[in-house]
Every structure is written in structure tokens, then in C-alpha cells.
Image 1: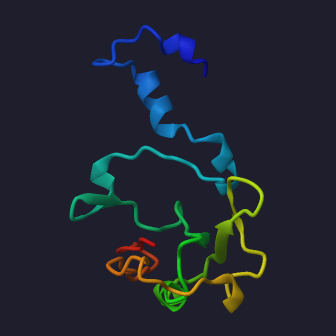
Image 2 (image 1 turned 90 degrees about the vertical axis):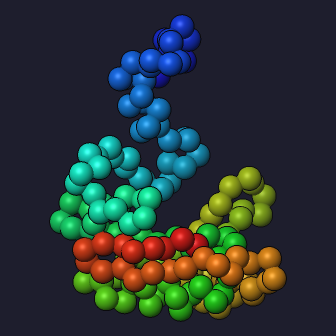
Length: 143
């Protein structure tokens, strides 16, 4: 949508259409993620602390998990363990930084190959937790 359309909008009271566009717009370079953004009423979600989650069900399925380029080898078994009780195991992907471009790409060695994973360093986050995922919900998975 052309930005000129919104140039003179009162920022304190933006129109509903602009709010929706801002919440559902995604950077074009991330189109490979094939992600859909959905706005849901908070009452239909599960609250955990200050966060709200949509439980997995027939309308929302976990189909892919991407371990980012900074995700070190110690997280591999934790990711697999968190997913083990799902009725269908999602596709597991290991990502890396591209060699000649400014982008993240799929590691061609695959998720299982130990060469795809970097060794953990002192700079790797130690306080991140991987929770348990079941058919109904995700408790925590931040890598």
C-alpha cells in the first residue's frame, strides 16, 4: 500500500485500516517463511504470565521449526525432546547465515548432521528455556 495515502493521518487516532495493515505487514525478504499473521480476540487465547498463546488445534498446526544460526549444538536434543509428543513431528530445519549475501538460509547439511551445528560458546545464552509442546499448547520455546 502506498505510504502517501497515510501521510496526513493523525498518529494519535489512526484509522482501523492502517492499524490492520501495520499489524499484518511483513518485510518482503521474509516471504520464504510463508507465515500468516492473524489477529485474534484475547479472550480466545491462553494466557501465560504476560503473554497470550493460541493453542494448537485443527486450525493451527506446528509444521516447521527453524533453529537459527546462533542456535548451538546443545539445543538440538532439547528441541527434539520438546516436540516428541506431538501427533505429527514438524519439519526440523537448521539455518545459517549466507556466505555471499545478507540473509539467513537453510543449512544444506540438514538438522540432524552435526556439521550443521556450531559449538556452544560463552556468548551463547544460558538462561533461555525450551518448554514442552503438546497437541493443545506450547508452554515456552525461545531459542
